Image (cartoon, rainbow over all chains, first blue to last red; front, side, top):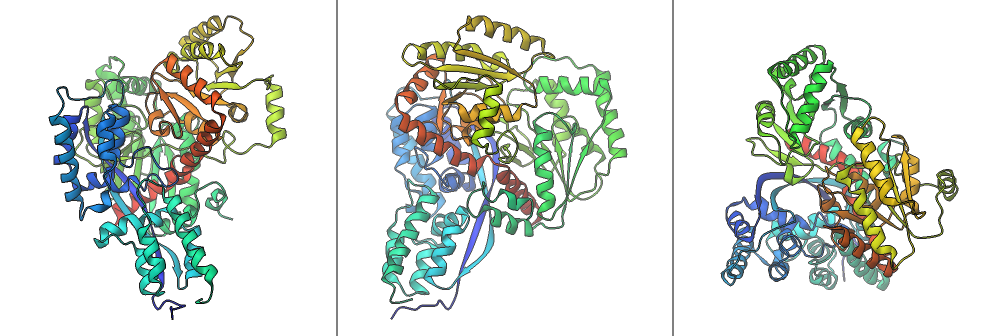
Amino acid sequence: MPKKIALHPFLFTGCWELRQMLGRSAGDERQLLEAIEEIPLDSVYYHTHSFFLRHKYIAGPYPNDFATWAAIQVRDRVLGEKLGVLDPYEFKDVESLRSAIVTILEEHLSRLQIIPRVIYEEPFHFMQSRIIAVSTGLESRTLTEFREMLASVDASAIYYHTFEAILRLGRRKGDFAIWIEEQLDLPELAGKITRLDPYMTSLESIRHRIIKLCDEFLERGAWE
Amino acid sequence: MSLLDTYREVAPKGTIDFLQRLAETVRGRKILHINSTRVGGGVAEILRGLVPLLQDVGLEARWEVITGTEDFFTATKSFHNALQGQGQNLSAELLQTYLDVNRKNAQELSLEGDYVIIHDPQPAALILQKPGGGRWIWRCHIDISHPQRKVWNFLRQFVVQYDGAIFSLPRFAQRLPIPQFLIYPSIDPLSDKNRDLSAQEQERILNRLNIPRDKPILLQVSRFDRFKDPLGVIQAYRLVKKHHDVRLILAGGGATDDPEGEVVLAEVRQAAQNDPDILILVLPPDANLEINALQRTATIILQKSLREGFGLTVAEAMWKGKPVIGGFAGGIIVQLVYGVTGFTVNSNEGAAFRIHYLLDNPEIMTKMGEDAREYVRGNFLITRHLGDYLALMHYWGS
């Protein structure tokens, strides 16, 4: 029999990204490669993971800053596509992700006679993230409460409990799915939330998809 | 209802509550903003909106303005131009005046605060008289991507004494031994320039301006300045006109105190060649409601700048749910997500091509306008600006 009321409530935490500039830029793909090898991990994180925090409402044409720059600023769509299919959440940590990006860049450049560079457009400017997490004060104990709060909470909480949680916990399962499984005893719903691919979409879209899944379970009704 | 609560309808869902929680972490702290003018200019406009919001969420926020002599402002105007890349010669006397005026202001103003935000170069040397305690941050609003080195090196000696610096675009970052943060400027969605207008209000304003509404309208709102490329806009309009019966409105500020502005305005009038479908409107500086109504009635909005600081007119246009075609310059490129919230272009032909494309695809135009408004809601409203300052204080307070 599934639990109706969680022993431990779900505490919604939001976050704000303070953006710090490194004062370093790349005008061609070789410089991009060299910089990626040297920049702090917080900078790799900024240009890959927290890209999603900056696209709360609208998904960008490419899902990270490196791919976007290559495709749109350098107009090298081949590199843009290669970097664009990288899912940062498939890597156990940011250092592994950095290695994968470096490998893609090295392989790509090894096949070229001329290093692609920006001509009219913008160099790549390296940044780093300072993520500030703050409790929203919202606590849910039932699926109904969870669904209602999820519908109204700041979109940064979706980022914190899905994208950021994957990195924080080191497994491809966010805070929402863990709480629903462990506290509400709803492994089926938790599994469906885990299987949602947050990649290539916006935080608002993820919010709507989780709410829809919750609604489907709530409509069954018997357990709450 | 608190001041921040009045933004609940326009801010992203949940953001007001989150800002209040974020503010609780720094409540009671003292933040002091110092700039060089209380009226006119983008900095004063931002502070007029931001300081009351900081007070509203529980900070002891103050806004002080330095005073100076004519020589001082001559020096700082030269700084401004030199930092934006123009050749300037600053005499040793003018540099001394700059330092003297800053010293005098430091004696007259109370510089106490947990966070002291110094805006732009004019009061930058106040850091020399910094009292003990507090974080001092230099907030630069101008494009210093290609500064004249001599002037930047003079200013740099003060900047490096700050705890951090804030710039409006990544490309403005400098080689500095202090942390540099990125904070975009913002628009106030409740101001006259951006608030919702009723249909009657809009109608009344457009009638007063004699704007016919019988054809799709292409609009550019900007000073009559070569960097805003009004002649390029006319050329793009002519290319589009071969296929679409459109009207072009070029609306800009008065040119009375700007000799070059008058020259450019004359060139624009000549280029228009009495085409009845090109309307040139010279608006007074406080024509906020007029700009608002024009943007709301336009079909496509252009900001075809060749050089630009941040170009907040793009965010203003996007907030009205309009697709924007902008020049590849300054902050326009961070506001227009290519093909999603608008298009950046590098030529008159590019502008014409994208106008043509949008007019031929009204459903894409509608979707782009909707996405543009949402993008501004999340990234360029004053509520985000408030959050950035709270986050910065939290970062340094923790």
